[in-house]
Image 1 (cartoon, rainbow, N blue to C red):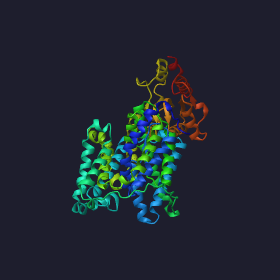
Image 2: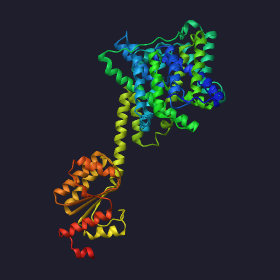
Image 3: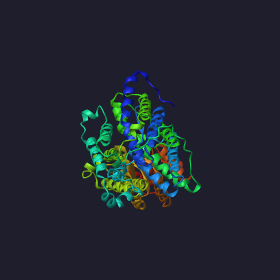
Image 4: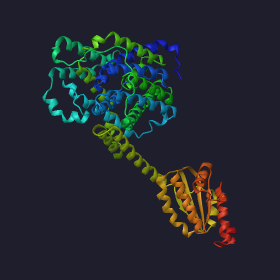
Length: 556
């Protein structure tokens, strides 16, 4: 259950952990403030999620902490519950974090890790870019020197005239300076010191010495005491809503972590254990919610710098937590003077990085369906709801994919009564088909047969009445779903009712079992054969017995 800690690379792991901790500190503060719960929530989340995910997770070099997407969803959860129950809203929000962790553990126990990221890229791109837009929009008010208005994105957008009318030039200058440093710091410097830490220190020092302190909103006193336990809180009427919110939060954490694990695999040329990673993430979020921390997931930036610094095992994640804890408890008084506008600048940079620029730049080159899905999901994520956006995006994307697959697979259904060069028959089998004098209807299917091709199969059934023997060739069919199984069964029963002979050729026992199981005994065992030659011989014998063709013609 525990990760194996290899001491052979202890130097690289320690260096990676220290580097990751330096990256984590400004982001933890930023996400804590952005969530509305204060910097402590971000710090506790960085410590607890990072520790338990490192010890119990399945990706040794993964750095787990509060991330932009998780913070955006958590902010919405907090606002929603506080609005309906001001007294217990925060405790309920942390309960959702615990429930999200339990869902992640359940997903891992059920071995669903490999299925988590099986989403169309256009949907993933749309909701990740939407989350980036939300994070940017939510920082508009803090960037201009004001408190974030209630109502999330819609509240911010509707209050833009008032926000712009009351701009604090001093705070906006700090925000702008932070962004300039984040975007313009040369790579040769950021490889040594993260741009976020440079901006945090330099702009904070400048704000203390060169700007009137009374005009700047700062973090304020940070409590560095051990966190109190937050007991799960909810009522029966709120249970259903909390489950839905927890499921959304848990799924987003799974997707975020699995995608980052893939990045880690590419950099280390190893393979992560997805189900174990989900359990580790779940334990981390369960403990974070229990002690009042933000939810977290695998963080791409922290993971990349961790690996680039030489990390190879979970010691790096544990080292990061230790270094981060020492830094937090030792620098609490310094943290209190950090301007909120600086954190807003860091959050905006994170939001810009979350935007899927690779897809946005190539949108004009991909199919119009994928582009439409991506921008629809993005818009719905920002203006409506993440769950609605992903649900509609998945539905539309899957319908389009199924339609394309069905159109392709429809070409693999052929119904002929004389020789066709496209049929995979050998010379003797072709002669047997031709001997039927057009009285044998040969249905050839290949590839996976899913419900989308049932209409194509139904169209071919219209020619059954003009033939005396029906052969259904499933030799090259790799899969039959329930809908196609019922369509084939109906074709067989329709042929039998019309006194036609029916023969089914199969290779996979699963295909035969599917047909026989669905038919509830209406299909006889002797109807199924293994070879095409056997089916064609049987068909010709039937035609002779019923006078459809003469025995002399067969011998000829």
